[in-house]
Length: 428
Image (tube, rainbow, N blue to C red; front, side, top):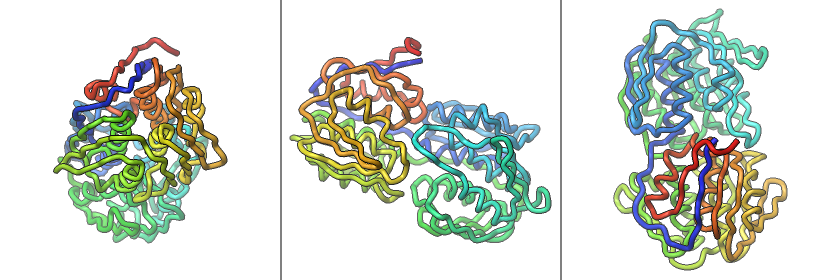
């Protein structure tokens, strides 16, 4: 397995970095191609392991897929196999997003229960409840979800579905299922993430009627045709990658970095907390300038569904507060097992005490380089960022987690002046 080696310093980061397209927007959009028979093109796609995994899954299901980042081309193949096996789904939880479009388009689906990062329980009960409301018969057998449309494979029916809690993939799965359902579907208490809004744009392009995407109530009127139209679309920038580089740009005093292609409005909760910590963040057209000039102030954070503080930025922000002068309290309300980066940061000299779903962080004068182990996608990013400022050398292992969500992170950071490299295939 590869590792990332970082030689920390007090040298400020300077220059500019371009933010890649949003992985969490690309994955459901790629799954939406199952609703169409034509040839679709998705542009501004990041070169990531999760994209390759989704492409492999679509090929297994019978699609012709060509990945040539930053573009992915998807067309209908000769045969359809509406079954997503464990070997593919276990690699990435978002694979469950094929369930809705498969049942909507082909009347049936057999999809393995999902895998992904080990950051806590992420059940799909809300997905299944919604499909049942639309007329599906659902069975769980030997680790697989087996779903059939009304009457043993018929067309889904529009319905009203109330989510017990906001769920991004649940909202997206039912939006795609409703795209070919008979009549109108109303989804209530929906996830409001920008990636959900982006999927709504795609489904409208494909020929169904979606309104309210990005709010807590979404209406979808299914197309009367048997399949939706293909599309050509460039996806939005990745707000979590942008947020990660916002943090990277201020681990060292004196840093001055421009992030290219960023929608600052999608990062409002993070930006407010970073400004409270003493960071200067300014929009400059389609770019964002980030500067640190002076010591970091402590700030408290509680994660929440969008538009609240994103759980996917908790690990990175917690690492930043390790450098602040004073005490910060970080509360995680989304996942119950998302402080796995804390023991690794402690090995680097961080002062953190975890009590249940809360981490109390006492800023320290410096961090120290160490060999550390990535446990999940965002935890791995936080360890790389810690290495930028730690004394001596940090070696982050198991960076296959990092490669699921960050495109060429070491190259982008090196372009800002960091002393960082990838060590290929040297570790178990």
